[in-house]
Length: 347
Ligand SMILES: Nc1ncnc2c1ncn2[C@@H]1O[C@H](COP(=O)(O)OP(=O)(O)OP(=O)(O)O)[C@@H](O)[C@H]1O
Ligand SMILES: [Mg+2]
Image (cartoon, rainbow, N blue to C red; front, side, top):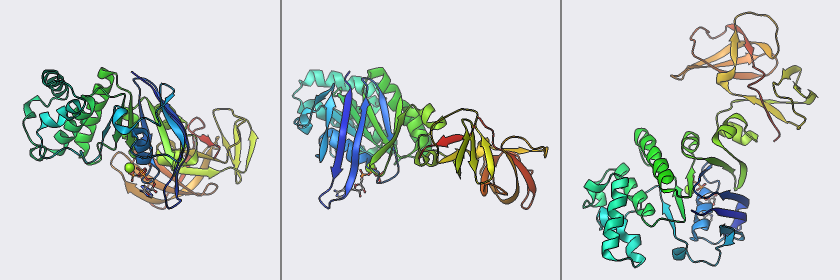
């Protein structure tokens, strides 16, 4: 098992457009790290540079701290899995999976043994003689995964491998990818724009935006402590309140509203945020910390809850998710923003 490091990577295309700015991260040996970010933020470009399919403008890629910039693609021993499977249509499943081993000049008997092993691990044994066109999308993606794993790659690169599949298949295949990656102890980098997918599959998450990294942390940390406003918005925070002043280590002023935080901090914040599901409707009209009045101005059924939009007297419109269908348009309500659910954002 080997680790991979990316250092000060920057990339501009010929048209002068800068698409990556000072990208720094590492993937530890045996770790699965995902890159999460919206379309066009530079995920595929980062992967292609690591694989050697594209040349960076500056910075470098290293394996176990040794730069591999002068190592050509075919000597990097990295495997890539793409969104569109990219299988050879005229070859059988067996031949597709055997391809990389053949290229490496491995003998027939050894190939047969190794391919059989991987086909069994990926539950494709029964389909060994089928051509790709005779397989479902999910089966085709399992074949590209098998083809990627069979060479025991130094690094497995996956570029939105589940995006073409329906939801049920996405869920089962992501579990399968994770199971195989852990079982085989492979170092992997997984690209996705789907937050749930990245959280479910990875040891650590890199959140990218506009060619730079916003945060690198465990899924739990990203979820509970987004580092920036961009990250918070991307992972489901909806209510953002600009703060005009920090009154105390646990108290901010947003307009005229005092907002109390459970956590004390001296770090400067520009705004606070909170998830819709963490805001409470209060039945008592008592004044307590972080409570304010409002009028229900919109109500939508989301399935798991109702999404209420509440026009408040101090903090503008606030979105609240609540399982109860109790409130109607025009109702006067009182909200509480629990102090342990408010997050301070520095940018
Ligand atoms: N060959 C190219 N020439 C010029 N610009 C390019 C080229 N390839 C990609 N780009 C630009 O680089 C930026 C990053 O593209 P990239 O494909 O890495 O994004 P991505 O995060 O993978 O997006 P998606 O989620 O849509 O796949 C985009 O703005 C894109 O338009
Ligand atoms: Mg892409």
